[in-house]
Amino acid sequence: MAAEHDHALEVRGLCVDIPTRRGILHAVTDVSFTVEKGETLCLVGESGCGKSMTAMAIMNLLPPLALRRVDILKAAGTDLAAISERDMRGFRGNRMSMIFQEPMTALNPLFTIGDQIVDVLRQHRDVSHAEARKQAIALLRKVKLPDPELRLDQYPHEQSGGQRQRILIAMALICGPEVLVADEPTTALDATVQLQLLRLLKDLQRESGMGMVFITHDLGVVAHIADKVAVMYGGRIVEFGSTSGMFRNPQHPYTAALINCLPTTGAKPRQPLRVINGAAMPVIGEADGCAYRSRCEHASAACEAITANAPRSLTRGHYARCVLLDEAAPVDGEAGTERALQ
Ligand code: SF4
Image (cartoon, rainbow, N blue to C red; front, side, top):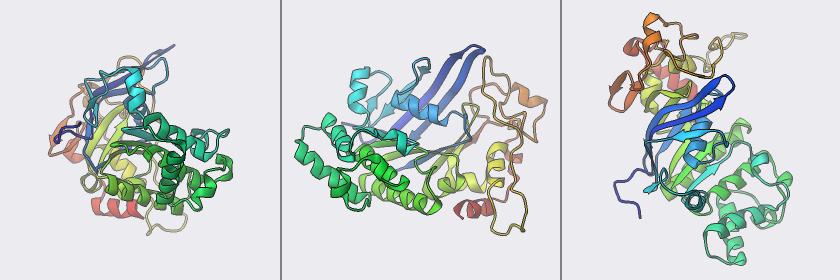
């Protein structure tokens, strides 16, 4: 039983290293955060920044060669750094669940929707097949899937993208998890369905009190769903803070640049969208200096020496790893929030 003061999820000093021919790839370095009950943390960043690896490391679902090191990893009061893989299998899908990015590949095309949901429930609960079907129908109704009785005997290919994602949400929630990790669950969907699913997840979270880690590259999604945000770059959290604090007063140039790239309603016809020039490079071997410096317009010689793991500034719940700190806030914060919510 979790003690009252426990966080829903606590991660301290998480690192994931992957050996490659060119040296050790530091996929995740010194990632730390907590998520409280009923709270949503968004992990944000572009492809390859380490957000999905962080999720897989929490779920202990890393690829075989990846090596996880962590000081503290606790979910729902259980020390996940210390439990066996057998116990982890009993925990995963039960007290801590994950919604995967691609609904077509996350569902098994050979089994009916009912078989897949019932299977998850019966792995973790001692219920009859008939009772499991009853609970599956009730949950499919709750995630607003039309005709749930009929769907139960259909296959994944008979559902639309939005319906498949609702089924995956139901599968993740069937055992009533205390922590939910959602890896870009709405990325492949059109904007209307995306908004419906974000609202649905928030409603379900309000009802159950589960803590949620939501991975996305979309700041619009962040503005709708997050209580706090961790912006990742080069495998590290480069800025962490409350959602409103982050949009109003971004401290790291990368966060500011991401907000600046959001489209505006007042844009002139043919006005090009702003972009962040260059590409994110994987951090292989010894990390020297700030990983963002080849793309940062504020980079200086001082940025080559920023190797310490500790954040460069720490105000109440809002920190960033940057030598500039307070100077690095070139966007209009109010406008940033408005743009993200459009
Ligand atoms: S440390 Fe330097 S390169 Fe890195 S974000 Fe800050 S100013 Fe830019």
